Length: 502
Image (cartoon, rainbow, N blue to C red):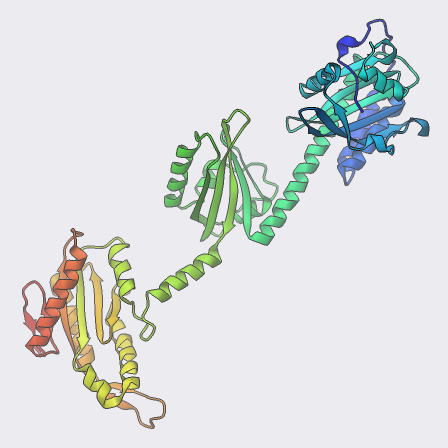
């Protein structure tokens, strides 16, 4: 349906529509109750139109939904109708569904523009000048009409109108006021339905994908988030507000600083910029959990940043798998000790406590052991060696298998004398007690005596190329220990040799 022309085309001599204020208020109250109580908003709209029709004395009360505005036409759908009798019904007429109205006529183009601006209209058909709107209304035997636009979320969603096929009346004043109030009620019901529908979708998304949806206004700092996320953070599902500062405090300080830095840099970007970061979030049980933040700064029609919105995805399982994979890649498969990759990470990626010492050692004459007892015994011997040495080390010390029978210990926070004492304890725990090896297929355990030679190097500070130098100095000390006769400890600084029993 086209709807009426601008109010300026309405002659002033047409009589006002007679309305009873108490009846109108009662009708609006009953319609409002229906909009709130009905399971679906559309059922409430039907009831509202049923209340408006009799109190207005109209032939039809209708709602057109805007489908699309194209450069040359407007496409609308006749979606709601109350009619006082069957002869006034248009809802089931095929021409009323998804119809297009041309914008070639200036009169109709002006009407569409005014509806987009929120203007309301009232007119009497016999008083209209010749034109497309008058011809259209005459084809429907409509003598007077009133209409108001329905705005949802700031946009023209459709039009609420009244047709009177029996009276030529002016709907200005109370008539249009009644209609405008009803239009606002319809918009509120539709908006509430859309929010509830989106909320249900969001909560389903939260359950299926283990994530929460959130949004922060950049204008006033107000926070909205899905119910599941509220519960995870320790708030009731119905909590009306989430303080931004308290929500931000749930983030690990390091991760929070990264997010604030990105926000400062991107909020003035001309186009939306997406941000992804793995963050630690403290949940209601005060435990740190891993989540992925996916966020984007949203802009209004003027290109101004208005909100920061995104999702919080639970990646705890993924992080656990990553950590397990990383741990496996940094561990020797045979002995469980760190491998060279693990040592490199300990020395380069983690902040070091200085001073620190590197103790390199290997098994004396290990080839002879393999040749005498076989490689199965040799492998079992390496595993037992690691188990035995771990009991001599502190939790913060790192035992590393560099390859074959060569090992290392990275110790921090020790003085030189303490590091040398540790190396001597390691030597004694190997040399003083034979290893008892049980091998599949052999009835009696194999007893093996063995010794190790050790070289100790010292690093006082995180200097340039200090890590490589530390390895080289420890290797030189180990060479000195072997050259002296094995089963002893040598220090890189003084090349002093601590022989067995000294």
